[in-house]
Image 1 (cartoon, rainbow over the protein chains, first blue to last red):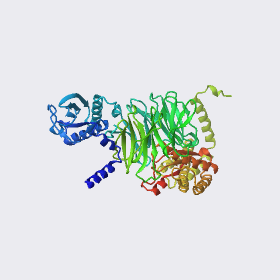
Image 2 (image 1 turned 90 degrees about the vertical axis):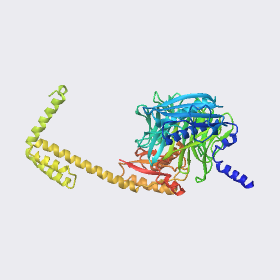
Image 3 (image 1 turned 60 degrees about the vertical axis):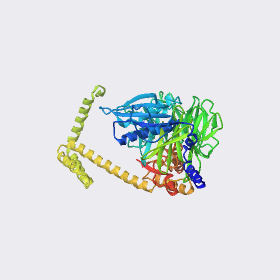
Image 4 (image 1 turned 180 degrees about the vertical axis):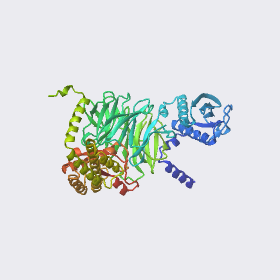
Length: 416
Length: 210
């Protein structure tokens, strides 16, 4: 018994590094869900791929304890499979390949052998199946009356370093299952969505004579030059209405934060410290939050734009070098160790400007580039661990983290 | 007096063309000798050059009888050849000078210059002020190790380039000759996951621009 207990303890420590440990604590309290596949079309490889994607999406909802067995059934059977009879919910779906190559999917959600929800989906090509999977998860979540996961349907834009001074900018879904390279060749980094509708993004071109901020309309591929600066140029934030930007520029070799008016093309310097000021983020209409080295190490500060009053926001962590803001919340990256070879170097923390409360969001590896979803429900971030990059999702309300690895290259930065 | 203000461009051209032609005919003998000596010079200059040259030469000889055009052809090709050899010489010197310029290394999370690196920058400034290098501009490329890919890391790379720039200016290099860029962690010279390797990546490189 002792051996068994210590074995269990060992197993729990091995997995304790991952924040999904929280799932185990809550496992008894959330509903059990199984998924049944009733597809007639397509080969087994594609069927299994779709099943896995759907399971991952349902897991990220964080409201079900999802059974991972791939079981085959008849779509119109009145009862659930015998293996699933103890499940609270069963999601049954059917993939249908249409004559023109389109993929059509029917789903129904069964509760106590009763169909409580059903819907059909259709996409023109089967290789964008993951967006249907995200839509199904979104709809089930809505049906269950949980806070919206609209961010699931949003696209991620990221830059990937493929060789020294060579990068690609890629648009993907939040799980990286879908990837479309928009800019290949050249040295383009720091992509940032230009509007809510995600029809265009800003990025920094470093192979121009001076670092240049460019704007690309992804509907027609048109590229516009916005502004250049010697030394450094990054679009750190885009205001909700898309009309103002916060840029880090380095006129005269001095990295400072500037606001930029998209319509009038005028810019204004907002910080003027002689060290480093970067990573400006809008907080309401009259305040910015940014990273500054004014204490001798990077930390998070805010500045009121009318009074120029600067305030230190974080009193924990020896080196806090990146942040993202939503409402009163700030998520930031803190260096945990000065030993770069330790297992635990950068972690993400969450603070509220209204309280002194600090919540640690990650536990192992190098976690950086936090970005709030537009509704503040989730945080997306980059995790680099043992030479592999992954995109991580933190569900704040459920205290759960999910990772989706990148197959090749190293993630440089991203926006959601 | 002629009233030139009423003339069209074409008329002006024809007028002056006429004057030059007249002038050249009077100077026929002189002109011929000039053309011939130019051809000889051209042959000497062009020996060992690319395959285009023989065509230019034959054209020059052929047109020696028509004095006016001969001058044009000769002058143009001679100028071209000079320009070309000049560019080559600049490129040669640039590569030569660039190979003598140092790489400046920095400590972890720092952008101040150590005495050892200061000596390297002083030597670079001395080289930059020599006659050969005076017409050249330099781009300072700031780089960081892979520890962190955020804006702060880019700013750190830039501050490193800026520190080198300030040191060069203090050594008498004109600030207008220096431009800067930061590549953050995305231009490593060493990609292993070791301390030694990271130290090699925390650097400022000198790139010469014409």
